[in-house]
Length: 128
Image 1 (tube, one colour):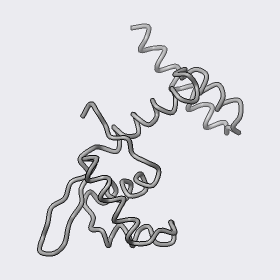
Image 2: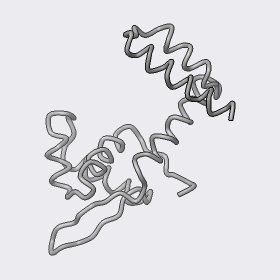
Image 3: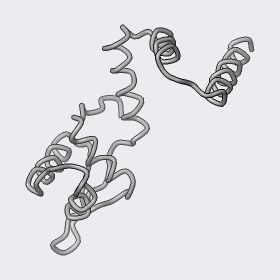
């Protein structure tokens, strides 16, 4: 899907549940969000309807129950959100973002070695 819908932070919480279960009822979503969010069930149902309207999720009906399933993949959404964040905060510069995170976050030796390995593999791929 090329034109992914813009998903709000609240809608992300609902999508995470649907992605994790592959299919969920409104009551299952409400139960999963209990304690995590201070939302009423009507708020959660509104979020579900917004996601339906955005065509981020679809549904199938079985008796009186509606089962909601994702129409867009979590991977696609994460990739799109990452690009949006990178553009908004770091003017699209991946280098600036990585440098900022490396300088400002405490990294373990394992983290550093993993970063080094990823960068070395990227270098090797570029040389081919």
